[in-house]
Amino acid sequence: MPRHHLAPDGTPLPGAPAADRAPGPVRQVVRRAARGAYRHGVQRVAPVIRRMGEL
Image (cartoon, rainbow, N blue to C red; front, side):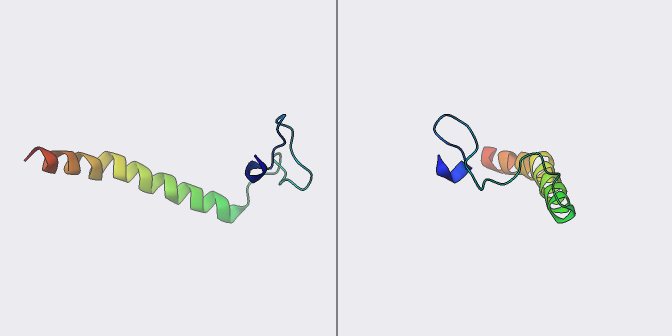
């Protein structure tokens, strides 16, 4: 699992990013925007696609 910066026993490998660090402001904004887009898709777009599939 080197891709996740974990050893086989689950301990962090040397050089792994610090998990206890707070995310930066850019990352927070991007995550908030992505969450909003996902919610919009779930609430607005998906029902329309489902209805179109029933026609």
